[in-house]
Length: 66
Image (cartoon, rainbow, N blue to C red; front, side):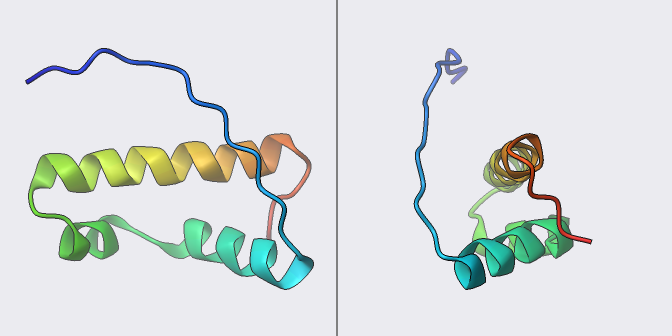
């Protein structure tokens, strides 16, 4: 089944420790992390795409962990 793309906007209010830890996780997580939690390769790929978009949104808002 091919799903049509749609736009979703998320607004997060986080304190420094939470956004720092989340950004570090997104920076460090790899295929193996997503695949272990997914039921299929396609689902793992979708998780990875979501995480990368979220990571990029943090970068775009001025927060890029080292």
